[in-house]
Image (cartoon, rainbow, N blue to C red; front, side, top):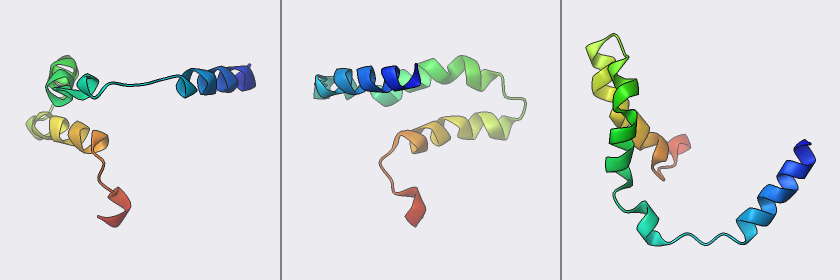
Length: 66
């Protein structure tokens, strides 16, 4: 099953074209999506830094050089 999935995934990706518009306001959409999860953190520090953490995960920074 895993091999079939990988083959199909590659077929789908080969035909995929993503418009640059899809990335418009992605950080704002991420903020809205993450709000209920961030509220569940017990500590204030966790809530304050959660959004920054998510932005870092989505960035194109080379974390190995940091």
